[in-house]
Length: 89
Image 1 (cartoon, rainbow, N blue to C red):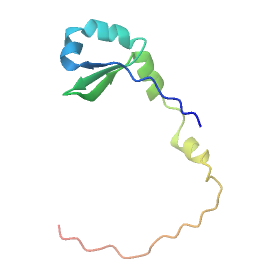
Image 2: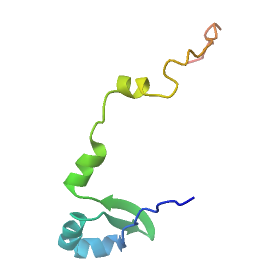
Image 3: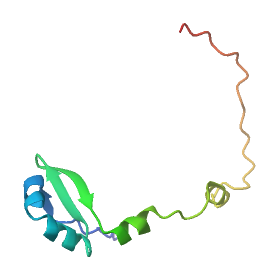
Image 4: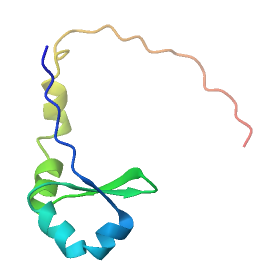
């Protein structure tokens, strides 16, 4: 079993990113740039092209549901017919 590990971007501190913002933006054009806060990864800066690629809609919800392995499986789903509970508001 061989798992492909995704390349993790080199981390920069917030102070370093502020001091070298132009360089961070330039490098983000070719690979994601990770910014850390207090030693913990906080944000990743990516190019507009990468952002658009990652956030592009890949079809409708209906298409997604119809492509499910359970599509057409004739599942028997029972609905409870309990009365609603009284809530004190």
